[in-house]
Image (cartoon, rainbow over all chains, first blue to last red; front, side, top):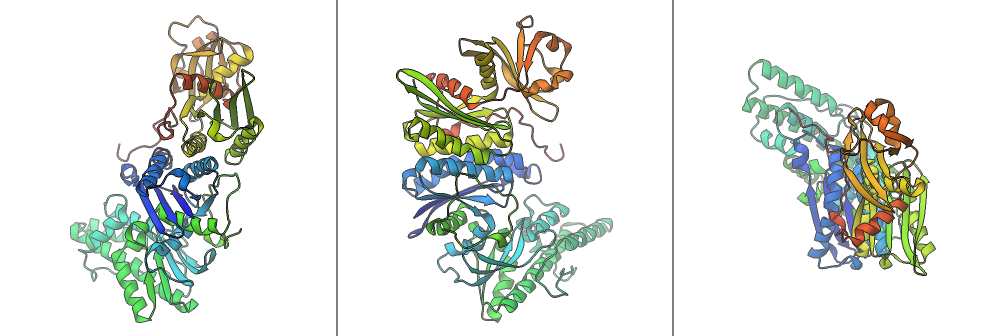
Length: 343
Length: 233
């Protein structure tokens, strides 16, 4: 079954073609980051307008690169949520229109299920069951994954997402949007011993996260350096390092606990922050120590993309699941509400 | 004459219309519902019903059209997405129809009005407005469709002494309009909404004029383009 995947939940337009026998055939992405950078963050109305401009050309691009025509498609999957409702609507409407014209099934899928299963697109995919850490600008969650649609939320952030904390720290350190990679780059030159920031919620049991206190601590430290006239390149790098170490430590501690609690030996790490090099190093050490294994999507599938949507959609469409004539756009949609494919 | 399908989701109304030809004459089949926030649920069944009623398939259409705006931003993109997806999937050209022109045509067809100023409430203290001369089902635009505050509304140059009729939700802002405009408007029909049955007629003329394009080229026309403010400016 050849499935077209469409992702328009935030500021990237992603399109891909996945074949349940041959695997990923093609994928294309258009990122709006440079446009939103002028405003210091994502402007929902501008994001939606851009999806409407970019989506069909990207669909043509993936069809051409796979040397297929639109009539070769057997199904269409699109991100139905969670995300920006106006942006989601563009993908939902286009997918439904196209599927109706081609007389093929269409299905709205969950964006985070896409991230959860993105490592399935790699050559050595993890087997079920596994623990997944989803870390992005919008989410920080630990999930126990027993199979497609069998998800149990183990813990999540009670306030800011880890990626959001990275972006806000970048602003405090006067770095450009999007801030995560910029903070990590600056941290490389930082002295890890100068500051030690708190590891929030690690001193008590449980798998929830909190990053807003760490953000405040970072701000206070930055202000203190500024008053002391030490907010120079080195001072900022030292703060970046202390911040990154605190976030990475916190994530690693919670992953360790999640593996202990579930008795599982496989850890999937996905979402934008999973591209962070220091996090990967630490998780590699941690999993190796306990005879467990960590899995990551390739770099470009860590962030939003059409391939993960095509993959999840293909699994569910193959099982007979499909939308009725209603286009789905669900801004808030807890992952735990998902079920195994309903035929 | 071509066979055409038009969709609209630009306001609280949701509509679809099909232009067909039987026994040598044109016929328009249509569906219309006032259905705020229900476009995602109502639009596709309307398309299916119309095609079934006419007994035709999408591949028999010559082109598709949608209400390109101005109007609700999200509504414009729902209609654009569905129309682009249908046209792309069926490999047909697409047309964008002005929602203000559709309002003018509605007033002309229903009340035989000649000089019509369609206006839609654009929120944020502004309205979308146009000015059309209508004759025998043909429209001529006398001023470009625009977005402006009601206080700055003027009658089209050279037509200040014409008896104009206002149509559409924008005329609810009557109290804020200049006295010169109020004096030039003989009547208002606030309750008329843009509808696909008028758009499919306008689209038929646009198609004949060779305006059909590849689907991705036919984008919504928002008119209000200042929707974000750059930092530090």
